[in-house]
Length: 55
Length: 455
Image 1 (cartoon, rainbow over the protein chains, first blue to last red):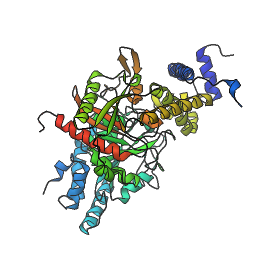
Image 2: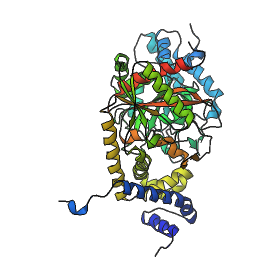
Image 3: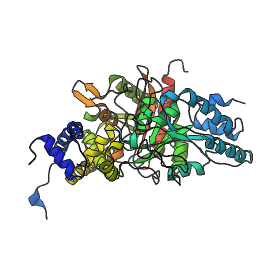
Image 4: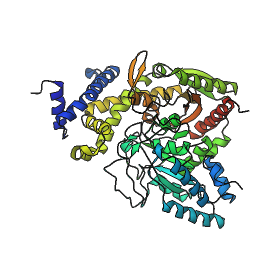
């Protein structure tokens, strides 16, 4: 089980079919963290619709 | 009879007129631009320089002109961003991956230029695969701003903007996915037009983001942009712009969080342009548009996913064939969840609706093209009172809304600040390029009046 952010990113990369060495993961990690933060903000801004309201 | 040399920095319409009147020959013109290119090689405007083929095309154009043939661009040398396929001319997309690609046919936009008689005058430098806004190309050279070689020309169509500003061609073709025509136009001091989404065909253009990509001209004047647009689009917006009345037009100067972080020297120029428009009888007011502050996040998620879909195979099989910055963007994009993309499209719809509502009250929007003047080459972070912002994020912040919405947007130079050009951006509703160009021409005129020593 991946436990650190670095391990999670490496696992996600493998699942996506990327060839990520340790150096690649280190280079990608800051951008990945910024991306996740940005998506979180977007998610908060686009308030989810009430799942019970669907028909 | 004017020599060809002064025409190298003249507007395209003036070049066209001189050619038609046989005051200069296409060969003389090509030779004059070639001399300028030789003097400006350190700017790294070109990936593939115009060669003997361009001279042969000039000779053919000369024969056609002597027979009295017509053509909107007959004998006019136009530089083409190296993202557009050109028949029998290497097309690299600024990459190592495509370094040996010689297409067998022209991109649709290039074919339209040729059909109008243009000479394809070299392939200009760009950010690798157009995926970035600095044109610091690891394979073909770091492009330099003609106003200060220590500064970036912007991108991704940096080479096209340099070629126009440094007098290396009569006009240029660029592409714009988040601002890639308008950003370098603003930072280098030329006109850049991103037309309505779909107005210029993209067949034969190496894609970056299918829902965001646009093609359009970079030129010395707004009138030139109209001439090229008419050729590229097959419509007559440039011609209509000459007849479009702008008296009493409603201009909305954009305010709100998206323009909070703008260099004071840039804001001053935009405000000066707005005041000058008011003095000319336009009705200028301020507008605030909700949700626009979500532009960068929305653009980023959308583009990361779309670009990584384009590059899905190569980023998995040949990651080392990309430069470091583009490789990271593409690898990140491969990790974007479908739900994130959907989220971004929901916000995109909100931004589109908010801007559409604003156009109930104004006819055009006015805002800076870029919140900063040309950054120093290699600068990665902007420091504002409210915090830090990546330079590439700052550069696309005010252009990307109109890639997300597909609305026509024009960058026009309006003065200089600290010795560097400032671009103001005019935006109108879908398919209303004529109005954008008409307002742009007035801004251009007002900028000339503002220049010290100009009557």
